Image (cartoon, rainbow, N blue to C red):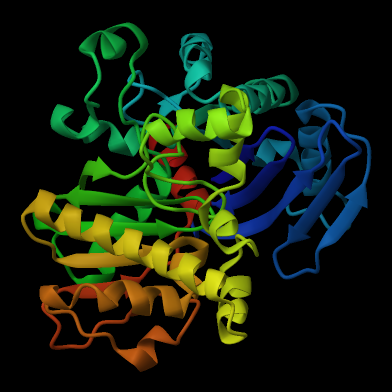
Amino acid sequence: MNVLVINCGSSSLKYQLINSDTEAVLAKGLCERIGIDGRLVYQKDGCDKEVTEAAMPTHKEAIQMVLDALVNEKTGAIQSLKEVNAVGHRVVHGGEKFASSVVIGDEVLAAIEECNDLAPLHNPANLIGIRACQELMPGVPMVAVFDTAFHQTMPAKAYLYGLPYEYYEKYKVRRYGFHGTSHSFVSKHAAEFLGLDLANSKIVVCHLGNGASISAVVNGECVDTSMGLTPLEGLVMGTRSGDIDPAIMEFIAKKENLDIAGIMNVLNKKSGVQGLSKLSSDFRDLEEGMEAGNELAANAMEVFCYRVAKYVGSYVAAMNGVDAIAFTAGIGENACLVREKVLGYLGYLGITLDTEANGKRGDDCVISTADSKVKVAVIPTNEELAICRETVALV
């Protein structure tokens, strides 16, 4: 069957059409600048990218353009929309309501909407995409795949904050975690690739991108993760601060005359390695800066890698051991220096880096030496394929 995977942002939309039998990507692309002027990028398998500038006032027009491109007489991947058998939607926040993917109906839509205040920038956009697809593709089954669902297996000791319990009772203030689709896919694939029994395994997944998170996975289930109520908690990231002393917010607010919105803007968009380096959130720029002798770029790199290593170490303790560590996402898959620096802190685990293997990119790869006590691998993530698989399993 053919599954259309949709990932809606507030002003963008990524998509892939996947044949679930072969898991081949028939076509992919994105819509940008929705609500501004509009741009469609479309690429059929084996063909060059096509870019179309066109008005996209809402996500409905964007999705209509995607569907039109898929059935285009010359470059379409399919002949008719009847060949789209299901649609899988990425939904950022499912709160405590969803511990797994679900077929979308009116009750599910209402429950997702109730989670809007937990992800005000993402969930409303996800809902717009779902409703637009329902209108344009009536009768086609649709599935919601949640970023938070994989982490719903965390025990209370991992997800509760040291706050008055009434805030959890009234507002569900707790750790939820994100990137769950990626953590789920990578932990399962890592176990398979490394020859581990998933049902008897301890794996740390390091999803390192502009947004970054780490998870502890025991026997295939998440027992802890670094992001919290929102994606701001945890690692130092591209532009996010990660863990800080909460009192810093009041201190800086008074010094800079900022309100809560101003402080949150600083923590989410002006911090992380970009804020530390005064240079960039892109690790390629940081490496170039380091080579040129930029001390702030070097400091930012060290802070990032140190924080990753600390989280890995804490999760090894939480799991009382570890069988494998998997690096994934843009930085985890491509930044050899980051992996080298992180693993430099983990020698106590009996890990030795295979320098030659660490220099390779693109495929599943073991980067620890054969005599290492813990296996370390680079596992490219594939959230779209994971969403496709979840969709097929339900419909």
